[in-house]
Length: 251
Image (cartoon, rainbow, N blue to C red):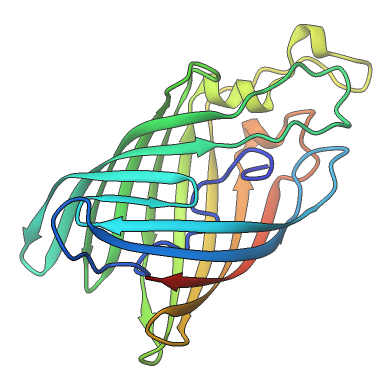
């Protein structure tokens, strides 16, 4: 349900580590263009698994960066011993594609979530905490995510990065995308108002540098819904797997 249904941010987490060089402070930096293709198993009833091909655009400056559907601005950064830390402002799209087969449901809209991301990185890996809220007043809810990843440099060109994450959806966010309102209830779809719940993710990202400019990226991620979300009458499967492969050109 996330991305292509309700977006699961970082599902296509190709940005990390791919574009780092910047020639002057703040705005001057490096762009990347590419294409990605993949598939995602669905969570919803009456919705088929999805295949997609999408263009990829990225930019990385000293403080400002943009990749795919997320923009960040570094507010503070520094070093503590052998670890580096940073705090960023984040704006990211939460994309919802209204399924055509879900007759009798009111529209749920895409939105933009904004918030803060704090993280620390060292030889032991990277740990981050992100807190977001609805900027457009659609779901009017909030989400907090803690995630960890560790990069294994297999060769000079090949890197494999497993990751784990847990997201907390507050009641408003959970109800907007997983609830069944009184006017939407049917014989086969009872009224349902989930409470706050969570989503767990586990994935792996693989990057391979073909040349100084070209990079191949592969991502596989599995997500599992918490009980309050999985029990929704809208949900057919309590988990979903996404696989993506893409190519990026840096310039």
